[in-house]
Length: 417
Image (tube, rainbow, N blue to C red; front, top):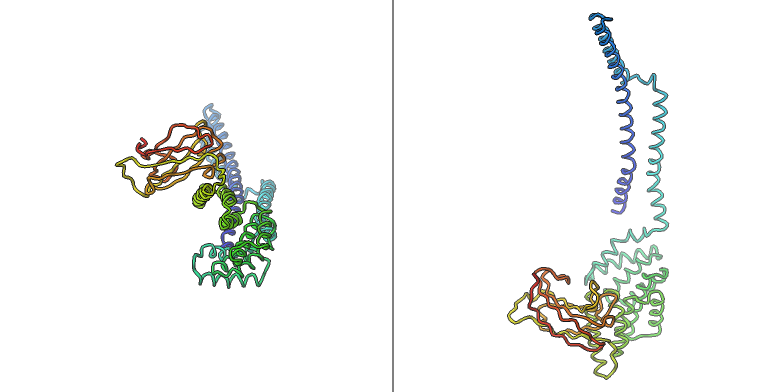
């Protein structure tokens, strides 16, 4: 498939170069022939006009005029006919020179087009990821594999043969490790992950693989950190301090040790990488629970302002329980900015008490960045956070949170026109 697609792309690219050149040469040849015929016709017309003037002035008799016109017509037909097959007697040298010039103008692009795939494939074989492209089918099967032990076993056999034949293929090692891990063979997975990382230069991809190494070691160590695991974590964070798998591991370990302050910091870093993801929503709830645990122990949570929104539907308002409800806190002094904090739920969750703080930021600014804010909640029929006609929406008055906890009561009743 790879070769077929590249061949098709080459033919298409060559067509863009060669087709216009061919059409241009055909057009020039046609224009040259048409110009020559027009010259013959113009000469015939001029000579016939002269004969008509001679006839009108009495210098020619009608019989003489008819004879000369007939000879002129025969001469025109002969000229046109001769041009069709023997005009080279007069213009051979000129046309040959032009033809040679045209051939050169076509030859250079043609040679370039023929050499282009040779150079492209040569350079790609040196600098590209040709070997990995050949294995893309196996890689994709690994990504698509979900809880299918038989498929994982087949992939282990195939990828194992590949690394035996050529062990300098980091991504083959990586996907081999992924299949080991899916079968719970973490000792083998750790070895394969290490083989993959050892063959990579320092890059975000290597940090990702090192994160897998640390995770496998963590599982084999009964979910406890060891000196070896800490060394791998340090190596990965030296390449990419925000590698997600490492942050997940550090956050899980901190939570296990009930070091909620550290866990919250790691979770916030994960949220910043993709604030609108489902994982971010889960982590925000984990942060809220961790903050509650810290507050219960009398520790300083240090969350900054907290907005508690008690949200409910108006009495008698019946809506589909699966409709999404978007809740946001915005800067009251600047329009057009992303929400300072936001979350979503469904109608089935109402009534609800929603707590938003700095950890719920979805853009570059959080609640602490604004003095005056307002809260809005919308029931969306389209599933989009942007309100549209027919949605239900409610908005609070502007208020100052003063860096403290504020409680806002909202009732959804009005429908947008």
